[in-house]
Structures are given as C-alpha cells and as structure tokens.
Amino acid sequence: MKFSICMCAGILAVIVANATWISAAQAKAATPPAEVQKLANIVNRSLQANPEILAAQSAIDAARAQLDGATLPLNNPELEAEVERTDVNTYQLGISQTIDWHDKRGALEQVAQAGLQAARQQLAALRLTKSIELLDAVGRISIQGTISRFSQHRTEILAHFTRLAKQRHAAGDIPQAELELARLSLAEATIQQARNQAELIQANSDFFSLSGQMLAEEIHLPESLPINLAAETDLEAIARQHPEVQAALLTAQIAKRKINAADRERKADPTFGVSAGREDNGNLLALQFSIPLQIRNNYRSNVDIARAEALQAEKLAQQTYWNLRAQLQSAKQRHKVISTAWSQWLSQGRTSLQQHIKLLETLWQSGEISTTDYLLQVQQTLDTQIAGVELHGDLWSTWLEWMNASASLDAWLNNNI
Image (cartoon, rainbow, N blue to C red; front, top):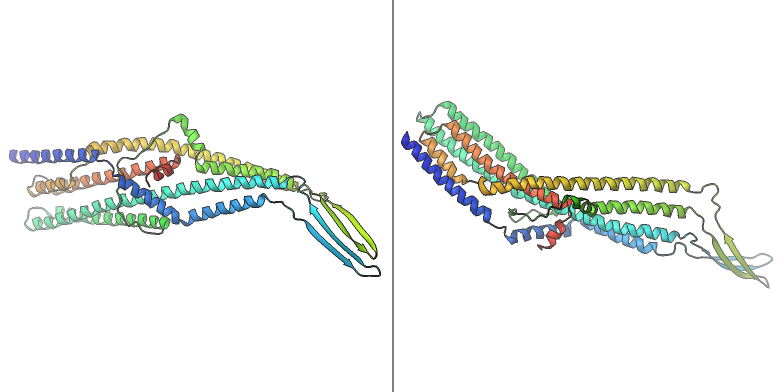
C-alpha cells in the first residue's frame, strides 16, 4: 500500500509540474497579429456585401437626393393661353407665378439636412451592430468548435473505458453495477456531444445569415483583448456620441423642424400673373392676383400632429440614451469580473488533460480508485477544461459588449485591416 501511495504521489508531482509549465507558457503567449487581422478582414468583407448595409447606403443616397430637391423652388411658373372666336376674336397669352412668401423651401431644406445626417448616423449604427453580430457569431463558432472537440474526446475516453470495464467485468474484477455506471456515463457523454454539435451548427448558420457564406477558416480568439475602460465621468459623454443616440437625437431634431415646416405649409402663398393679347383691333393687358382663403380649414391640426410627433421622438431619444448609458455601465462591470477570472485561469487553471486522464486510468486499472471515483474525476477534469473554454467565450462576449456600447469597434477594425 505504501508503494501505491508513493507511486501516485510521484505521478501527480509530474502532472502538476507539467501543468504549471504549460499554463505559464500559454499565459505568456501573445496573440498573433495575423489572427486579429483575420477577424478584421472577415468583418469588413462581410459588411461590404451585407444587404442591410447596402440598403442603408441607398437610404443615404435617397436622403441626399431629397436634400437636393429641397433646395429647389417649390413652385414653377404657369403659362396660360386663351383663344376665343365669336363676333369678336380674342387672343390672350399669360404667365403666373406662386411666390413662396413664407419661405417653405427653407423649412423643408432644414428637415432634409437633418434627414441626411440621421441617415448617415443610422448607417454607422447599423455597421456597428452588424460587426458585433458577426464577431459574436465567429466567437461562438470558435468556442463551440473547441467545446465540441472536448465533448468528442470525452465520448472517446468513456467509450474506451466502457470497453475496459466490460473486460474487467468478464474477468470478475468489477461488479455489474460499475459496468452499468460506465455505460450510463458514455450515454450521457454522447447526448452532450450531440447538443454541442447542434450549437456549433446554429453558430455557423448565424454567421451565414450575416455574411452570406460559411466561415471557411479556423479562428482562434485572442487571449488578450485591447480595451480602454472609460472613467465613470466619461460614460455619459461616450453614450451621447454613440451612433444610435446620435441617430435618435437627429430624428428628434427632424421632428422639431417639421413643426416649423407644417406651420409654414398651412399659410397661403399669393400668386401673381400677367397676360397680354388682342381683341379684334385692340390690345389687352391684364394683371392677376390670387391667394387661397384659409377659412374652412386652416390646417392647424397638421401643426399639432407635428408637435406630438416631436415630443414622441424626443422621449424615444432620451430612452435610447438611458439604454446606452446602462449598457456602458453593465459592460464595464461585466468585463472587469470576467477578465479577472480569465487572468486567474491563464495563470493556474489549465491542466494537461491527456496525461491526467492516463493517470486516472492507471490508478483505476491498479485498483487504487473505484469506477465511481474514476468517472467522477474524468468528468470533473473535462468539465473544468470546458469551463475554461466557456470563460474565454464570456471574455469575448463582454469585450464585444463594451466595444458595442462605446462604439469603439470600428476604430479597432480599421487599425487591423
């Protein structure tokens, strides 16, 4: 028995030393710049062909055309001709022009200018959203791919162990109950492997829906991610500059300018005209003036509608700002917690999986541990490895949350193209 204890202690010492060396080496490994550039290229390539991005760019073109149209005069001149043949022949030709007396064109131009700015901010917000969604899908593909490999490895280990258990049961070394326990563990591992593969398929499907193609290259997520967590006093300024907030504020500005446009639109514009002609042997010259009488309907309701819509847009912009402010605070706190746990995992959490499994099998074969202890430790070892991979995925997610809330992802992508 003393020999067995010494043997176990010696093997464990070797494992711990090996695991410590591996953890230190992995912790010091720097993220290859090529991996970061690969991520940036994937996002930029996908955004160039994304239908929603192209639609938003067309919306900018439409807003620019609307602004060009708003700078033009509202009313064109009208040409009139009249011919009358009776006992007295009359010929008359005239021209009239409605005057934009209340500068309706100026009001519409202001609305169009704000509309163009809003369209640009909406495009920036959409690009940020799609970039985050793409990187999130890439991250899930990478993480789920690693977890699926661990799950497959667990299934292979337990399948091998079940075969050994059958042999030992046939030799009378272990009871039927321990053999059934091994079979149940294998069945559970098979089910979990199928679930992990299904999640990987879903992640690939999400990436395809965003980019229109499957992710052909293997991606290794960076272990260290650049992040500049702003001070508490800077969060409000960052939130105000976010494209979503800017787009919401410009939408509110458009709604306010529409109040002025609606008020000017309801006011009547005069029309002036002049005509000349002949009546038999006499010359005719006439001056014309007309203006609508806003008596039966003064269109005041249009102004009231515009005011209500402006108030609605203002409140929605305020809510958008509150949402971004809360997202910034949450993303900052979550990243601090996850990054601390990730640093601890890098320094001491990872172990040499293969050698540890072999050690457990050796101890089980020699009778030092029971089948239950073996399965428990194998499951715990693999669960710990998977937990580390999931923690890496959480780090990636919290980093994306901050880059999204702070609208700093685009600068990171442009710096790594």
